[in-house]
Image (tube, rainbow, N blue to C red; front, side):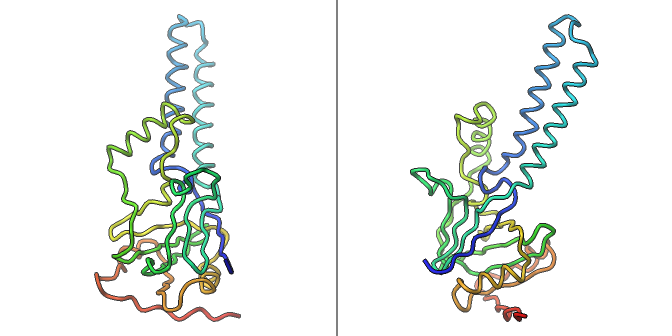
Length: 226
């Protein structure tokens, strides 16, 4: 196998489908509605202050759960001399439903954006690469509805990390614990020679610096090693 680069990925995208985080406020809103309905049906037997305290507690719990889910970290990025694997390791019989393998010949370029938590890595693909197409809005809504009603029995669908985010297709990975220079140096040991790697300073530059179709991007020289 040789050297392998393993990185922590921030956020719920490594395990849950697109839009999953918004199910958390939905669950707590449903719970608050149930508390209100019980208070009304009890004919005022439930004190107002107790009902408000329960709803306030639910709101605080929802905010806490959202913050935890937004900052959770998982080892969901691995790269070696063969390619890149996105998604957490799993013992499922069908790991392809939870992971995505990107061989180096399918990768057109890598772009690194410095972020507060570490690095936002964008992986752009060549036109000939096979792409896992994103589900339509209707199919995604049905998955989220099923997860809302049966969060444990229904399943979670494909993780958002393994689905492309734009056109032309690319994948964006929030990597923690490394600077752009450190990640670039680590990837240099496993990536093929000549693969364009760019370091950007602003996130919005990702769209403004998209290269024209068929126009190659010149790789930047590697950062000097102290």
